Length: 275
Image (cartoon, rainbow, N blue to C red; front, side, top):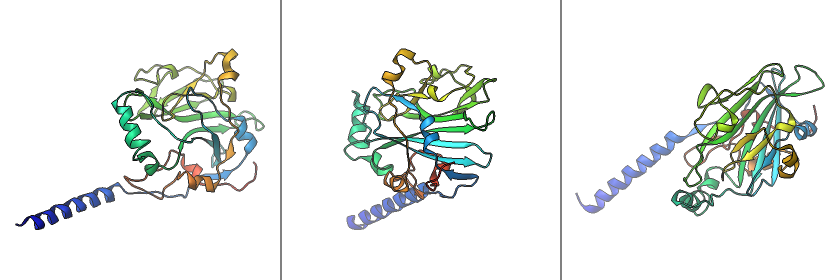
């Protein structure tokens, strides 16, 4: 077998293997969401907007989408938007991240889209008083075993469910269903029982704990420093134009393009009306 024929066979095999790998990575998504009705209420979104504490560059905008579930709960997704993300820590892993992921080849923008968009989701209800809302549950992603010298960051979804002011709530990680975790130990693998009765809008304060803008919920911030340290942005409704610009949703995901983090209800846009 001559060299030219052998090279052609090898190239054909590699192309077939790459094509098969790409095809196996395809995932089709639907923009149709059942059980939700998209709504818009700028006043309510502003009332419950989370505050941030960040040592580095803070987000330059806060966008939201809102929907009412068939059970009558109000779901609000708050999207914090940064112009970029970059790991400036020392170490080979951080250097490779800057070279290939956030800079250089810019794999992050190829996979997800421009800038960095991270989400915190609240679920509200009016069980006690039809004129008032309370937080029923809280959802966000934190960094598990965070080490800035590494190439990447392990995302750990966190879910807080509040039964009401008369009962305790449970905090669980989706990686460990049913396990309650103390907010102070969520950065590692330590786990302990959480015993917090409820939360209010003033307690929705989050620390930006990693270079890729993962969150840690802070409940014991010194009241004297509370206002000076917290970044509070006025939320604006997440327009369809911005939604497409940031490439939040991809009808077809692959190894080369991925959805940005968002709850499914936020895929539907509301008319500019209030509740």
